Amino acid sequence: MNLSGNTILITGGSSGIGYEMAKEFLKKSNTVIVTGRNEQKLQKVKNELKGVVTILSDVSKPEDVKKLYDQVAKDFPALNVLINNAGIMVTINLQNHQLAPMDLTNEIDINVKGTIWMIDAFLPLLKKNKNAALVIVSSGLAFVPLAISPVYCAAKAALHSYSLSLREQLRNTEVKVFELAPPATETELLKNFKDSDMEGVSLMPVDKMVGVFLDGFANDKFEICPGQSSQLKFMSRFFPRFILKQLSKPVAAMHAN
Image (cartoon, rainbow, N blue to C red):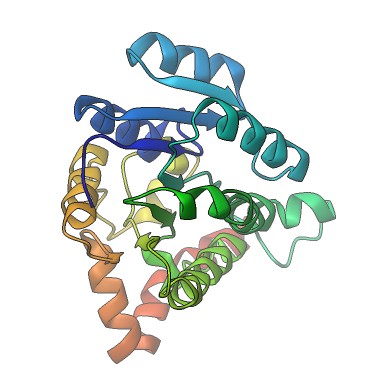
């Protein structure tokens, strides 16, 4: 993939990995559009990143996805890269029945449904343009779950499986399918986690993680597993019970509260 001269749409681009991607792609002479659910955060991005286009949109709402597609197809018909980055992560005690049904599955709505709806909406446009790519941001936890975040990990595992199927189904097209499986990264996603939840986990600086992504993207590496993600994938294959036990240690503290 070319790293310059693209028109790129990044969902969840107002902070964290999406923001860093937007910043780096702008440096490389791309047209960059970012979406998010928080208007104030988007305005901050617009103030900080010269030339970025911001659009208020929630991927978990089909009506927002359709409206976003209509706007982008009209104003940016040359769109050739869609990066599905929007996502949330929470801890859920499955023995505590206090969550409303929608709160219990919110991570599915945003992380999984949102990605599938976005790809379904934008694929026809991408197929019209050269040097086209879909990027799905999953997680190293797609390969082995962190038990205190069961729905998030299930959602990312679903995205990993979906990426594999999507790549096969688009094999007869010019659209390339990339999966980025980040390790634990220094972003807002983990701000509500306790130090004990992250015991033994090395947080990867977001700029370094995105640098690994850009290198893999440029070299058509379709499954990109930076840092500890590659270790999780290896361990899940050869030592699945051991690595699951290690990542399940925080459960005891969760149930003690």
